[in-house]
Image: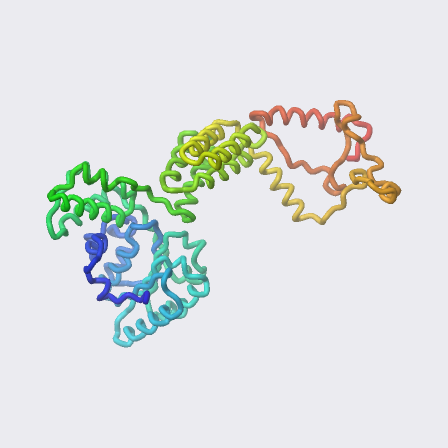
Length: 441
């Protein structure tokens, strides 16, 4: 059953180090000074014992669950924890009943929902009446943006607090405190402690898990200190913080795309390396690089699209690491290439017209006439074959439906190949203006 009793939470049997050293007071809670520093609204509310429903939003291992339990401890409230991954209607009803029983005894209840974004909209709605009538104080924890994952009705009844990745200083303090809580004392030199801190990448739980592995390994060797060799072994295969499909994933691909658009090959390579190091599928990046080639470079340098497609092909054919190097080459080329979003903007403008306008008929002179009946109807009768015209261009011809004949979507920029394209189009417009046979009049 997903309902967790407080007695079970306090048991240290088989608990990892991260659970055993979980702080219960603000003095031992490191990080999140923007929320819990002196004079901050949340800190003042906790000091005054003034509970309110809230959503704690932040990446894994930054203290969301710890903060929820600490709030209950500081405010002497009954604590019920549910996991949205494991819980359903049955567990929610049991939690509500338990909170009502506590209310009859005169005690407030905090209902903590871990990974609340995994509850569907109807499950989230089920909490609303009990948040409204004060049956419990709702505290949700999520790694995802609440604006996208939570009901507006639930959000309107809570305060959202954004928790940040833990700083190196906060992680160091957490690990040093943990070392003092070990049954058998173990020391670690500052340089090796810093290596564990940096490998944790802002995640307190990960930092404590790495420390626990290092302690176990050192003690297994009969050592009273954690040396460099132990840390080397612990950090083998460590990966950076990366959440496939989550906020961090989309933030990093957004940063990569913007670095390419901003002509910063170095920053683009950094974000690409971060994603690969975190376990991102290189083919996903390859697809996005193709998008960058069409959206941000376009006809300013048509070679960009071919290079992007070639990189994708190399990744599919050869895999890692050759494919990743090819993608890196494409990223650097795209970042350095002349930029134009003229095709992207032109397509969006044309699509907007199509969706906003009626379904205009194809002009008669542009229609094929494969049958006698169609020829009799005049299909294609006035069509001018461009190859038979001077310069291979039928000056003055109109290829739009009549109501749209003056539309202009594609506006080439004065960069790269598009500068020459712009010159060509300007010359063709001059021929149109000089033509005695204009369908624009």
